[in-house]
Image (cartoon, rainbow, N blue to C red; front, top):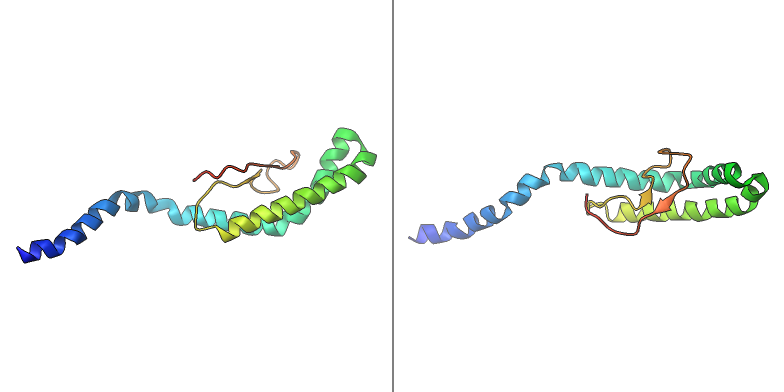
Length: 121
């Protein structure tokens, strides 16, 4: 009887965590993707300036792109770098990327936007 009471807490813990272990199969993949996304966004944040100037030049002309497009590019550079840093610091919590598009080379002809809602992957 004593042996049963000694093993009961261990069995309860195993029973409680069994579904989480089954769902955690892709957890290393998810945090690896978030870590890579953070590193890439920190490194490529500078590329937001020419990207935004190019997009603004096509839409509103080169004079507007040289001034307002350049300033908007600096803001997007700081945003992508900042959110990349957030992804690096919190990579253990697998959330969806806050920067849209995830990487700068995805849909290069679309201006960057930010989604401030934290959603788990």
